[in-house]
Length: 338
Image (tube, rainbow, N blue to C red; front, side, top):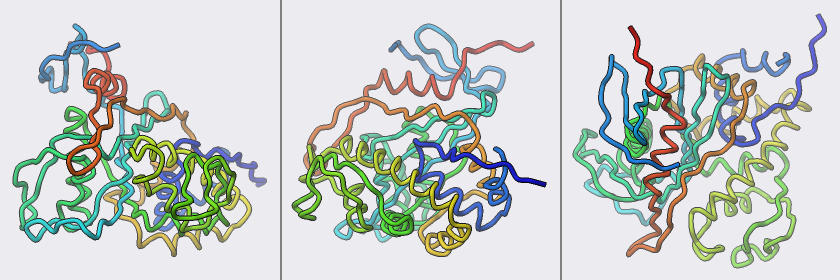
């Protein structure tokens, strides 16, 4: 049987997410490998209530019900901060510098990606020295990952924090990738070429704003990680660079997958130590196939204001836009069932 040629249909928006998912899925399930060779306006809000066992909310004078045909995955890029306080012996030195929520619409065969600012100021849950819930603190969303031991418990705490921030929407799974994996990914594909959006000559003389440069691993990590003394020093600026880099990485990754049969297996061995996820092999395979085949609705970003706080940058989301985004992504007009 002659195999049909597979088009390069890697979603442009979530390249790193897809890479992570594909790597894990291939490692644990050959179904993804087989897939490679086959065809393939603001309003007032009121309290949330329960109606016929469905979560509902009033928004702009209308009743909406939380959709049951969605599946969501929290994607985190985790980085280490050596000077971070080890609070009460249970906090670790990791923060979620990169936060995205992949929302898959099973009815319409599409997906969206909510890119969340890591500096978002919100209530985040805390854990005690035994890992049990101990209340909450008001701070950057990224700090939710500092509670726990840096593995699954920290990921679960981040999931809870993001869910609370989004008015309690359900988040089904999580995938965390340490930022140390960026140089590895970059060099695996032979370097990634971008037109630099900011000036990095303070760290690398060749990285001048506006120049087109093929980044090596360390330069790539700096490009998606650094923000202090870069541009306006805000995470909003860094998020734009991260998205630009992912698009370029996607193209190089797709080239390698389609030209080198051993590329995926080589990638698995290098990156498996950098990831934490609660997904099973079947779930990872399903997520991967969805993102490779379904319609890409693109990025969604919540507008707001970034300000310099007493200790660090703080991002305050526009509450009306936040609620509208949640309604658009997770709810539909309520219809009473008999």
